Length: 164
Image (tube, rainbow, N blue to C red; front, side, top):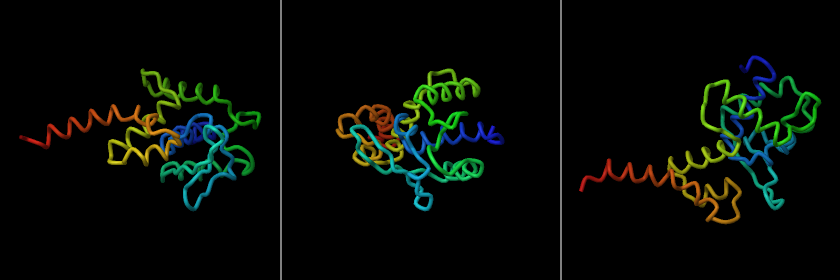
């Protein structure tokens, strides 16, 4: 329910994971000052203290705009009731709780949303090197784990379109 501050925050959290491909540890550390609203980018600190830029889309932008209307513009983007940044465990609980309320029976975590982000990019024609950069992977072999679903799609497309 995006009519309440909590509902809006939850919707924004899910949308940010899905549209940025961020790790949960990256997302909990996003400060409002890390966001460039005009270019729809966020500066995140990835593994190995490597900084990278992630992008977010129009849906996330709208939720972000609505969310920040009622929020202190300083500090962390996602905070608990005490005003402290959310912990990884709190975020994992929130994602599980959301999925339970929308009757998703499979185990969904923030990492599941990251995996979905990568899979959707690959299935829609993104090359693996671009996905590697967007995910902040140092090694291409790490990104390779996301290609198995794409391979199934490739096989499906091949047999539907190549009739020989």
